[in-house]
Length: 597
Image 1 (tube, rainbow, N blue to C red):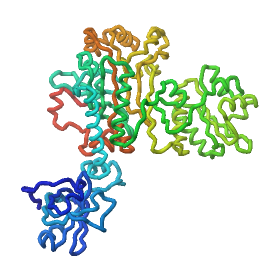
Image 2 (cartoon, helix red, strand yellow; image 1 turned 180 degrees about the vertical axis):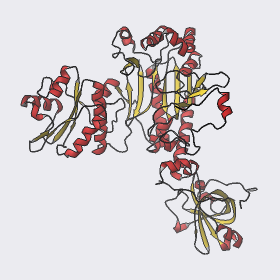
Image 3 (tube, rainbow, N blue to C red; image 1 turned 30 degrees about the vertical axis):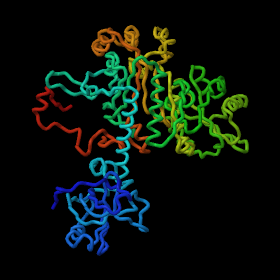
Image 4 (tube, rainbow, N blue to C red; image 1 turned 30 degrees about the horizontal axis):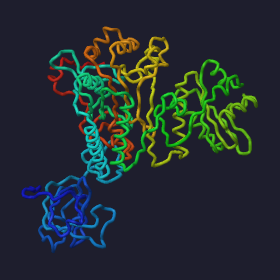
């Protein structure tokens, strides 16, 4: 039967007891990790979020009644123990932070008994994630997961402290807003008071933080909850947290400078990593041309090689016709890998097909001078000479090539191949922290599905001043945006842009994106109206806090740094959500009827 803790006060957490407490009477509380009865001695490991402390129940010390009670302890019982802290001397356990001491029990209260958990509460659990998410409150007791959640909490505190010191105001924005197009599907919330109308949960506080700049708040930040109804993956959740910020009377350089110092500060405090400033920069076009990605992993050097001119007019029609039709041919050179097995090469052929490439051409130049290739027999000696000179291909090397009339296909397929090669050939340098600013993104991208241009970031991004005249041209692909992403080891940590603060430029952007004046007013009227009352130049940036924490703790998934995440299918196994509404009156109040297809 559970006992009361009345009259007891915990001295410290388990991992906080050091040698300064030796000889003192302390009161400790927590969960039983395990208990071992050695006859006249019972050793119990007591656990809380801070660590583990060994408790010794010795019948001569605690008495027969307490010893008998201790013999009934099982894993996950919640207990309170009073006693004297003593040194373990030569029996110290170096693997525990408190391994040099133990608590010799005098009294014991069982505050709560526990059923046998559905899986062991232990570090590096091999239990399937689905079961752990169903019992997430037990999963969070595991020391490694608890440590990650605590690190995330510390990260939030450090960010708040830094930005507050820099003059930012922490301001909350609403989570029931108007639905506005931002790239992903909105989560909609029906209104009871306004029949047939819906709120949307914010995909980001984008428009609201711009309005805060209009209102003169000058520097804003928020750890903002955001919601996007999109397909999930290891680093994506339907609800997530952004470190969101906006600054007035600034340009791009001001935003990058303060954020470089923020990154330097938090990585030093949490990861003990010294980041050299300024961070490396690369334009979007250079990132795509050289690495096939707008978030290149720079921990290994395997650039994409330009081969278009080298194969122009060659005997291999796949290349020559592609170039003739305005396409692109690029490659990746692997030094010393000419002997790669054909089975492995074929697996890379299948990989690039998943990125819409029609195939993967390859050329192996063996150490003995012999050639194995998927296309060499169609090319003359002069053709091959031009290709080897353009790529630096030598004996012992292997060259992969992709051609396509759509440069995005070439970039995407070779970018994916580059990452696969980096992993498979163990090219990635462990322990590296390669930060990169990617700048000058395209303002627009063409949607084949919609048959028109759409904003690559959002409609409120400022074009580069020198590209403003290009906005009036039919081909909008050359217009660059004052947009920037911060990348770490091939992962986008965050991104932002300088915003449009001039009404006529904003109206022009919306017009180019296919918004009529009526539709623009309907969806963004509150913002456009606000822009009539004096708007300061402003810019901002937002990090994915979950993704940032994931990298800092070395987790494989952002689910490992979120207390109560959704599963891979977006469901909550613990609370069984989403779920049907069982009270018909709730739906009736919202004027909603559920119909079967």
